[in-house]
Amino acid sequence: MSEARLEVERIRADFPILSRTVGDRPMVYLDSAATSQKPRQVIDAERDFYELHNANVHRGIYTLSEEATELYEDARAKLAAFVGAPDPATIVFTRGTTESLNLVAHGWGRRFLHEGDEVLITEMEHHSNIVPWQLCAAATGAKLRYLPLTDDGLLDLSDLGSLLTERTKILSVTGMSNALGTLTPLGQLVEAAHAVGAVVCIDGAQLVPHHPVDVTELDVDLLAFSGHKMLGPTASGGLYGKRELLEAMDPFLGGGEMILEVHHQTATWKEVPYKFEAGTMNIAQEIGLAAAVDYLSDLGMDAVRAYEEELTRYAIDRLLDAGARIIGPKDVSVRGGEISFWYRDVHPHDLATILNEEGVAIRAGHHCAQLVMRRFGVPATARASLYVYNTKEEVDRLIEALGRAQDLFA
Ligand SMILES: Cc1ncc(COP(=O)(O)O)c(C=O)c1O
Image (cartoon, rainbow, N blue to C red; front, top):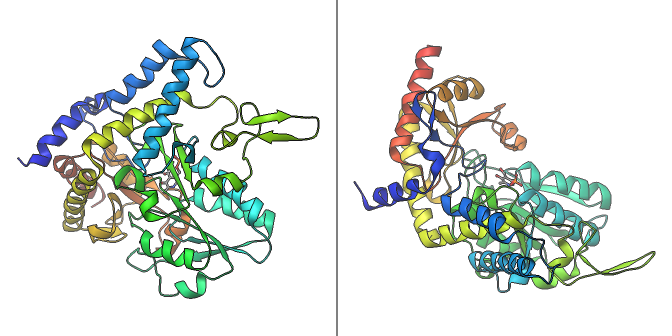
């Protein structure tokens, strides 16, 4: 038994849900790309908040409200440190990546884009990094352009020079594809985008949970992320933005708490990040997310990535041996543990149903990435996605369950 394995057994003990069964089999959860499971530390942090400190933030001058505000602002500082942001004020709390990207497309896009401008995204984006830009393009007259994919599921940068030009005002790309597992060469793209004066926005929904991220080192302008995919509660997450950019952007939602003064026809906004946090926020969830950040920081994100790389390599090798077709890169140095595949000719939905009978939870569908499905000529894929609590034995259970699917469809 390796050191890494011993560590994982300790990790698994922190996740109450991992000890449950489905049918009469121990559950194997391979859908962390959709949402991760939560350790006891996160569940406890959220419960403690409600049991001991619950009050609205930034409002009361009584003890509970002060405590709630302190916990909420501590969470912001922890998130800032986790992604390498220079200042907690550069972290805006949101419900997650979808809301953050809509905030950018609205608050930055509608403010700064005009007819003739271009927004460059990629064909491997999640719909949440496509549709907000389509809405924004329709409202501003800007044009949406796409970086294509190679047959191996990597970004095809051979035509980068003609796609990324001085007309490009923003490059908005995923850091890691949820449908292919592909890691984006961020360093190269950030440099190329900045060279033409474009703003860079990263969809970090899959990257931030699985990979060390330092926004200062990467010099990205905006980074969206979801707490629920990184061991935190649902409806937690945020947007990092360079301060001057956040200051220049329009608010996204209007209402209580984000204003300085309201007059009959006009209003003025609070400073960042508060001008983006209208109404009562997801207080308990962000405090829970801070516990998730502590948990991941204790593991160390380099160790998280190294462990997942090893497990992904094992899973891809075993899937290929079993006759599966991997859709996405096979080289684990350029990908993460979101593994899309077809097994024989079994439709992914049938496959997921059979696997569920064996206690194995995978996802089947287009994974909110219909452009990827079209690019690879499939209506859907089966997707097994891995995280720090998964083991090689669980991958073996997946392969075993595939054998049963083959028997049924033979
Ligand atoms: C790459 C990517 N971007 C964006 C999202 C949307 O995240 P959320 O549903 O947390 O807003 C997801 C969710 O699966 C994703 O994988």
